[in-house]
Image 1 (cartoon, rainbow, N blue to C red):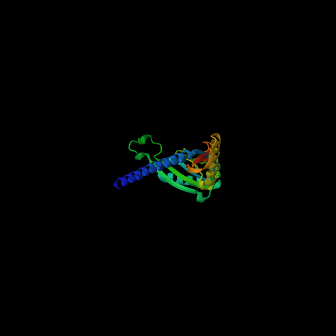
Image 2 (image 1 turned 60 degrees about the horizontal axis):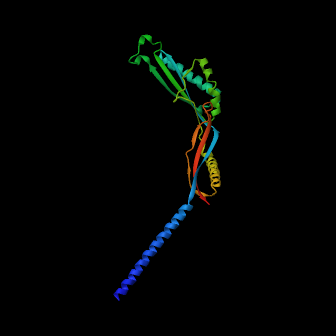
Length: 239
């Protein structure tokens, strides 16, 4: 009786082992089959658009020198008003014009200055700024800024922190259209790949939108901007 029971237990154990091995092989085969069917292609779609700047920031700086600081500051204030009159003549209003600071440099206060060789003791740098949503007015006025030289207003050369800037601030208005264009271009590339590889293009597996970049179209037209975005999309492929 015990011998029969042991034989039955052995048979059951062997059957379970065989069953588990078969199940494992079946699962492995299924996974391998599924993996072989899960093919995909990754493509990139580009969208570019040229737009006009909608905002301009125009710093205006000039310098003057003299030995009587009181008179020099009066002269600077007069020249500030002359610049404001020039700007208003070209269509700017008070809300677009800001008078900045006046920086005074006393050459006698410099430790290593040679007082005998200094023609003017004081130098004043004065600044104004134009902030406008009408870049065309800035383009027109800046091209005629040399007219102020006739009033003995010496403009400082534009540098990195003192340069005319044109900005495009309406990116959100064009984002949907550009993303759609980038996605369409990516799909066209994927369709071409699928056709060349005798496959069929399936649904999107994953998608990643790149960062939008805004740059000048070229160095001569900073008021024209180029907006660019690249989308990366992965599509399923099937036979």
